[in-house]
Image (cartoon, rainbow, N blue to C red; front, side, top):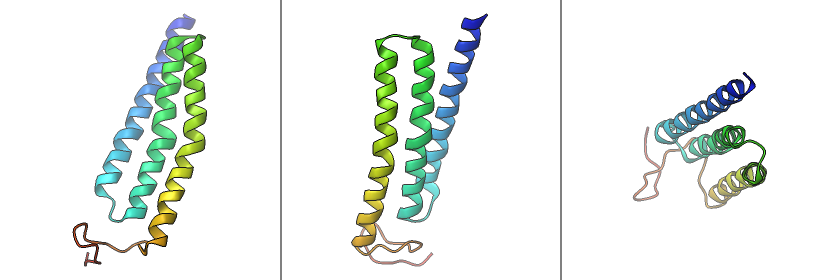
Length: 112
């Protein structure tokens, strides 16, 4: 009975993580500017990967694999927000303004 509950919970976590991944991917494609896309990517990093990894941890039981996956979650929680912040700060420093639309080929502001 307990094994079925753990198996069910692990699959729920994996599916929730997959849903966050799909939503984040749609956000990367649909959102208008760089800063909105960075937000979508950071949400994907912060929610998608840990949910999927937690599901894998439940599937593997208490083994060395679980400990490695736990270290991976901690690493992601520390590095993902830092990387997103560094990208946003570099974009601001290079002159990109939030809410403006830029042409990817010329780098100049475009309408719409």
